[in-house]
Amino acid sequence: MRAGTCVAALLLAAPVQAKQKPADLAPTAAPPAYRVLAPVKLYPGPAPGSEAWTIPESTSGQPSNRIVRNVVSPDYVPYLPDASRNTGTGVVIAPGGGFVMLSYDSEGVEVAKWLAGRGIAAFVLKYRVRQTDPGQSPMSAIKGADEPASNYEFGVADGAVAVKLIRQHADEYGIKPDKIVMVGFSAGAIVTVSTALQSDVSARPNYAAPIYGAPFGSIPELPKGLPPFFLAIAQDDGAAFLVDRFYAALLGAGYKPEVHRFQSGGHGFGMNQRFTTSDHWIDAFFWWMEANDLTRKPGDPERPRRRPA
Image (cartoon, rainbow, N blue to C red; front, side, top):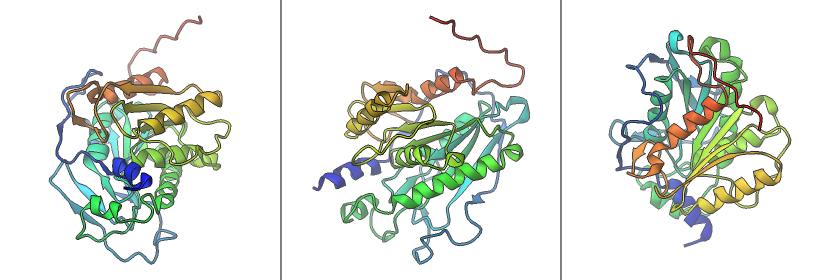
């Protein structure tokens, strides 16, 4: 199998049959105190660059384990916490799926529910993926492709537009324009990194969290003023070397990314239970946001400041 295909196959390995995640270590959420709004289209008309795409979008799988393919009209769905619990932070969520599909629930909706239940607005991004024969399995589609990650630039463009739109409408969503986080999984992690590294600062998130994913090929140039990064990967994930390499590049450029290398968990754990420490990546993610003053709800005491060394 070609090297590129091997890596892309890892990106595709969404958790299709895994069980749901158990109780968390981070603060337990009260009964759901959020509302889900209608999808917001990223473009007023056909998405630029893919106007000629003809295969319609399709969704398969059981509730809580849906797979979305052939996205033509990208959008995001807002999950907004009740005002009494609102932290003012917004998290854009980019599911993974090898740029062939989106693991929409375990790497999207379930993350949004968890965050919104804790006062953090969440926006599940449905970005464009490669057009594939609906009769083919996702793995067959990616194995048969000449370039496994082809068309990824459409997903990256959609990520940037989503961040920009959400920032423009921050008041409507009850968030602050300088408290926008982007978290992505596998292929969605590549969308997240690329969005954070782009030259248009107005479309960059203020914080970035690529989960089990990092740039393919050579590391792109790291511009000045990048947001803080949170990285997470299982050590038995075949894509771990990509994350390790990106972490080293950030360090070499003078940044201080946080990284979690779980003992095991494989690729694509998302919000699914693997009975390993990777089950609690989202707790670590929450604590990282807490350390960056992104989780304080109305009435919460001010977080103590770290004393200088």
